Length: 255
Image (tube, rainbow, N blue to C red; front, side, top):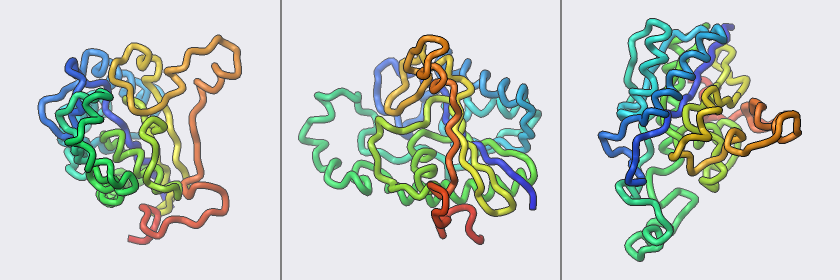
């Protein structure tokens, strides 16, 4: 059986001076720093000798601009996959401030955080991402593919693959700008999930970093335990722990 890797890459920083939740609103492209992040990831993948055979992205501008340097670095045509688009959200176009979020007009959006009631259901996001991953795996069989998507669909998919509840605290998402959540398959079976931040050193200068968490955003003195933690790469058993049964509706299941 062949080993294939599908990298779920989050887009770089977005030019968003008004601080709105842009969601699926068209016209939000990368900031200058966001372009640097995209270039940095492309350089990293080349330098590390990755065998990228397919690059696909969400149709949104920020994802397309993030994927372009990666496709160019490997001499590939950039594809578009609607299934990895950002999740729908009630708050699209809203300035994300405490005062705005507490307005009575938004209260009904908070009724069910487990679904969630403010946007596309987590299960729906996972279902479409799953199919995109399966198809990308087929395109790059024996090599690697990059799917450029968005924080929430990527994080929801990772939680699903690790057998964790889909509902979560947005502040705890480990999916920073231009990060890679890499899924390793042996044949059709998912055998590993790995998280890395090739552009992590650029996060310190980013304005658009929340929600989420990243070791790169916590300064630490060289040589300390904290510094070592910042340099780590998170590796997790795909099923969420040793001995845990695989998810029957995950990409490693029979198709």
